[in-house]
Amino acid sequence: MLSEAALNRSPILKALSSMRKSGARTLLMGGQACVFYGAAEFSRDLDLLIFVDPDNLDRVRAALADLLAVPIAVPVSQPPLEPELLGRGHAFHFRCKREDVAGLRVDLMANLRGGPSFEDLWQRRTTLELDGEVFDLMARADLVIAKQTQRDKDWPMVARLVEGSYFAVGSSPSAKDIDFILRELRTPEILIEAAARFPQAAREIAPHRPAVQAALSGDIEQISRALRSEQDEAIRRDRVWWEPLKRELEQFRHQR
Image 1 (cartoon, rainbow, N blue to C red):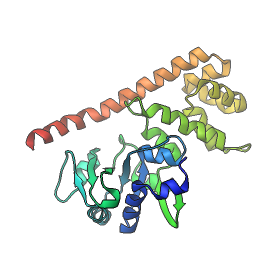
Image 2: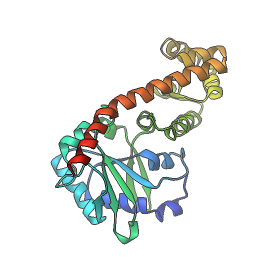
Image 3: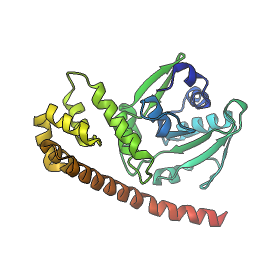
């Protein structure tokens, strides 16, 4: 995880501060959230999930104006952040021009593969205080699901996020912690260890997750095959979700 001093010098933190001061409800996600959770070393972009509500969108627009942020890709709407497009899953992309955040890319979304509502995600959020300011992050478990994409670079972060949960639960994990760990761990050796540590929960989950079934028998090769199958299915779902959105983006480009 980055040191507090390094984070305080980060343009990303300055952009987050502008969002916070606007009063907008947003959740940090993407690579920078992984940095805060210790699952990545750095991120160049700021990815935010935003609440789609007229007042909240006005606050987000005010923060973008404060950052001197300009659109850099389709879709482009006027005013920025068309609610209907956000609701369908489109992301809006901006580049900041204000001197202290110059060059920073900001990506804003409101719908993650048809997942939980913003309100549900907000209730589960993690808060982090730095230099007297509070920042809202997507919960680790929600971030794990959000990062299961068709991009190869996301999967190592997924593995590290879940490993971080496993090593953080201590000697008395809750049933919810155990369930999350056994359903999402992606490191064969650690999954074997977790199945041995929580055998009753592992036996209950095994019929629904072949990787846990294999972990109970200690078969690393079988675990690896099951994990690969899980990843392939997650990639397929992500492609199915994005395919109509990509076609629509091509239409936007031709219209421009």
